[in-house]
Length: 202
Image (cartoon, rainbow, N blue to C red):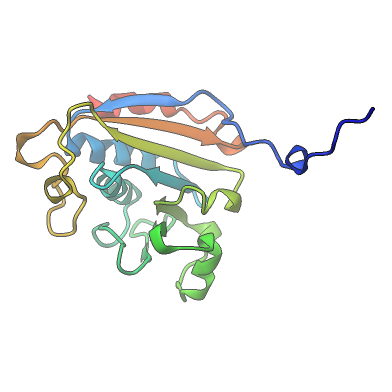
């Protein structure tokens, strides 16, 4: 007797990473920026980087380091109120498109309607709050998850990534340690030396 057919059987299996995740401990906001600068050296046009973490975890601090490492124009700050900011390169490299996907319902396809003066495939696209929204845009993506250390202050007023206080993560002497997990998906990241970034956190 044939088993009943389940629609779930037709669903595509969840995409697995193409190599083991790299887990790093980052002690301070400045080390987080250094990690971003180191990661920037591995990036190239067309890369999609997803940043995940609770409010104040350090996503924008890491993105700020990425911008410094890529040599783009303008300080990288939270794009919360504009959805996306474009930072053109000052050194002939790719532009940085920094996206806050919190209110982006249709993924980066919606960005085509934002009149951005940039070609996304020629840029490095960094997306905060993109889980479940932008994965389908590319089989090749780098997922960066930031967690506070156990016992770290969770007060968003003192630890949030804010434009007014770029060093706000861990303000007031609370535990600033973060655990950062980097997972590469797709052939683009199958041979990338993410483990070399460990030197950026010490």
